[in-house]
Amino acid sequence: MTEYLAITGGHVVPVSGDPIPGGTVVIVDGVITAVGGADTVVPDGARVVDASGRWVLPGFVEAHGHLGVHEDGEGWSGDDTNEMTDPNGARFRALDGIDIEEVGFRDALRGGVTTAVIKPGSGNPIGGRTVAIKTWGGRTVDEQLLAYDVSVKSALGENPKRVYGDKKQTPSTRLGVAAVLREAFVKARTYAEKRAAAASAGEPFERDLTNETLAAVLDGDLVWDQHCHRHDDIATAIRLAEEFGYRLVVNHGTEGHKIADVLAEKQIPVIFGPMLTSRSKVELRDRAIGNLALIAEAGVTVAITTDHPVVPIDQLRLQAILAVREGLPPETALRALTVNPAAILGLEGRVGALETGRDGDVVLWSGDPLALDSRVEQVFIGGRPMVEPADGQGLPRIVERWERFGRSSWTA
Image 1 (cartoon, helix red, strand yellow):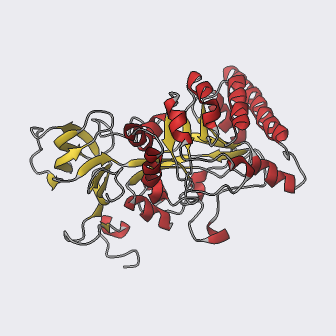
Image 2: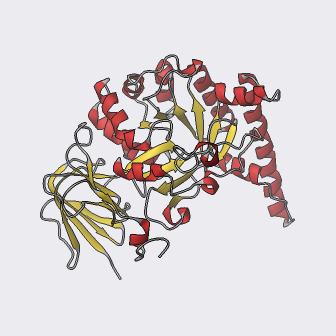
Image 3: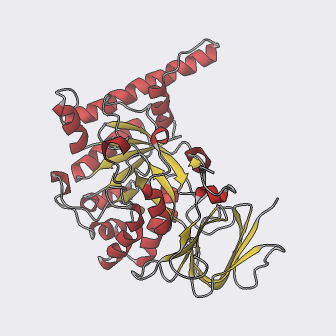
């Protein structure tokens, strides 16, 4: 049965286009079919949501977090972020460690975040595959899956050298970390050549999951998400990417402002943050919220991250607000929460804007989301309500998973 939803009368901000006062967004079977003014045709039988006096935006995209794999407040039992037993963890997958009942998923909804790219941690030089999921709505994580293949997480700098240095094994220095990455890609390239030769000759070939993942990076099927803070580590990331020809995305980029012109020239995007943190290690000594404005001013495409649970995921927009205070243009800040992270990680066909053909992930705000006193009032993911007003009064109410599937509770 076809499902129709029309959100009417609100201040519609598509992000990919100009705002539409008194606009309408039409969603059919979870996909946006129309975004326009008051004269937009509303299908017969549609559920109509009156958004008068509210701002209507696409759901925000958290481009780098550990939602569900590093469960907030759960200690060691809820921490599956790093498998720190092998410096080359390309075969590991964040998807296999996600608990969708983590409290952070509820926080995401309250913060207007409807998509999260979940990544392994930065303890290994190569941490593993990342995954993009919706932040609510499924009985299992698989039912919230947006993109199975997004990127591979890698780390330079202090974290991997500390982890393996403490074990008295390679890599214990920045030299060693770079060597691990270089050796891994050389092996993957050789593996891909042998795989192609076997296929051409019709011969059997033994698959290796580590090399399969890295070969996909070399083929351009997976982005390379490089954790790096210091400018010299960013330079190493660029050097390695150019040597092996893969698509690099700088994650964190704390000192990216020092070589912002280089990043702009090479068209390397930066997922910046988290911003609300202390200088907990040496490579964060030049941490400043204002650095994001300097990076963007140079012409670098930027996104914003909480690195949840380092900063709770519902504070994603608060970081954007603070970045605006420090000089980031509001339009750039809004794009850094929506269209930019979607484009950086290859999700632009699905999320990040209110645009025909994209998923019906829509958030209704009490006002401008870059105003501190605005709050989320309703959330739709795939055109279905995930957060609704509590009988028109009080705080918005999260629609529980069991309600979505016609049950009174999980235990009924």
